[in-house]
Image (tube, rainbow, N blue to C red):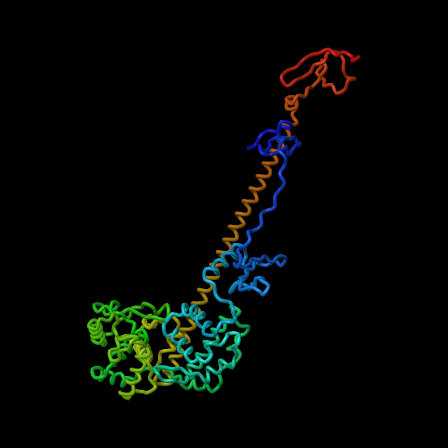
Length: 525
């Protein structure tokens, strides 16, 4: 609240001790308080950690968080930087990170064993995987590393990892097995990732798994074991139809050939997602485009799907396709990829089909046949659960051309189509660039307008304050204001203001704030 100073008549705050204009003491009994320095931050609890501010280096994140990991022989706290992030922009951010750490503290001691490291790493890593098969890839590779389970992480070296790769053994179904080339590659990949995790948390000073590469023999063995996917020939499809009633699992292969499901997806199709009225089934996995996609049931396999549907109801299973010839404690009816691959291989041998066929070939056959009969490519990609990317479709499809001329025409049409897509893409890219530039310029002009408005308003406010100050000073200099403060003005009879005793003659007129008085001067004795 503003009041008027009794001395200069200018406005001052009612909390002011003295007038800032004339220095008049408004509150003579009150002594000015000395400014207090701000209180320092409270001390953190013992064992909680440390937060220190690094000054003089102009850092974007100057606050470093440290966690307590033990004590020295003299009782001094041992601290290490908080991981995976130690530096924070504000003190509160660093404090929050320490609080989160203490909710679920992780062990930073390098003395933990390889098995303890594996448990900690898999707890975090498995949450990022989308399928059980990816998890099984890690666990199957880990089974061959039992010789180093109890070794300390800090003692692990490249020779120990190589020993697991070359001499590792695993007990599988009561039988001791050596790792294949594929398993050896997975062991190497597993240690690459696991020791990256250990390096991040300073459990080791080096990732020894990345200091060497697999031998050429292992790589060659792995490449030799790889076989490309091939579609079924028309004769082979006919053989499958001829044996659909006599050989088990032929119907499942045909369902895959006419729908394009992955082997894992076949075993996960639930009967509640099978619509026999509209002949559709919904399922899928692995990618965003593959999850929960709806696939039409081809007219040729409708009797097969309906038979499987009734069989599932009779078995009390929620899945459309079940494994009825081998029941284990792990899954009486569950139809997994491994079960499908085993039965598919046996089926290929029994029917004397191409021995190069693999479990995914039914999916490849569907894409190839769909392209052969000119099904819309985007429909194909949706059905098989691929993103709209030409290279992915070409990867799994086989286009058969009879003559070199047909091949040339096909390639020219593909090139023309690619150029058209590229031209359209460039136009869209140009439109997007222009749109972004316009948006940026619009935003810049908007900021400039706001800045201009604020600047003008500041100038107006300043000038307004300046005029108010001038008005107050003018009022303070007004003779009437001075008269109100107790001053008087002395004039002679003619009205001239007297400024010296020498000018006094005749009667005097004294002007007060509330009137005038005439007096007769007399000399002082």
